[in-house]
Length: 426
Ligand code: ADP
Image (cartoon, rainbow, N blue to C red; front, top):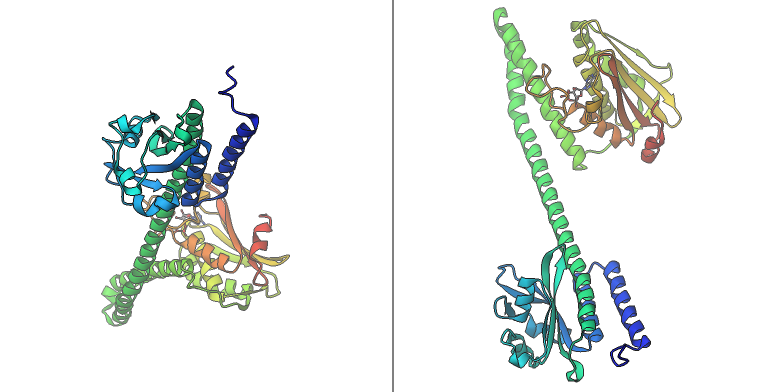
């Protein structure tokens, strides 16, 4: 082996250390500009060049611009555009191959615009493509090997190694920008959706209130033969009001507008009130409804209106999805730190594939078009929000054709949010 071409061990170690160092920079920082600066300074140092730069394709895709360059030339090179068709960098970008220029004065492809801007005379030049998964992202160049020397195979290898680091840095940055843009879009869409729900529910509420008020009045004064029609109007108006209220509740909770006004409440009382409010409906459908609640009051710190909404939605579903002759059972008991309430029915049950989704907003087991029951698929998601606002949790168990059991836990004291997830479902 020719001893002159072999690098001294010390020099080799230095190069390896430097390459290792830039790999570390790459994984330790997300600042693209800083990473590229350290890559070009390593490129010029390790190939003994006067300067190094990175070029990227302009948005119009017709020319390249300087993405990274030595700080002293930043102002001048910022405005220089490098044509794709008549430059070495353009050739490298289009062909995805390295290019070596030993004498720039006799290379017709050499683009002189950068020399003119920086007052540097390019003598020699080496450029390699920056490639990520087969796509050329840019070009890494080094200019003017010191002491009039020629670029070697070794220089090319080093430059290609640094270019692959640059490819990762540029690609990471693109992905991060993409992810951020998507996130911004989602936030924007979510804001628009919340705005729409808030406006729609607010704007619908007032005319609906008027319709309901007048319809209720008319129901009392019309001839008896028209009463059934008036009943239908009032009943459906009330149903519409429930849907609008559900949308508003979900939206308030999601925007963090809703809050729990915690004070000691008796779960026993809430259960009694909810059962009273559904007594007629259950009876009309031929269902029996009973409860098993211990004599003590089962106090929790919470907001009775919100707990009542959660429980009402469960009882309403139990009535809706249980056939005539069926039974609904509400149990409450105290377990360490929590009060546990379950609504059990022997109704139609829920298939396992749906059971995992039923607490999602707008989810319904039957298609909305074919189902016999009303509803918007919001009842359970509202119940979940109400329970979770208390730091509690809710879940469902069900066997298709046999019945369902919905259970929620409420912490006896507020501020036990995390503890609820530790309690075993049993
Ligand atoms: P909706 O108001 O449309 O009923 P929910 O969020 O309250 O929406 O419930 C979602 C779906 O879960 C319902 O459409 C129904 O298919 C199913 N479901 C809820 N409770 C029961 C139950 N007790 N028995 C059987 N299916 C139920």
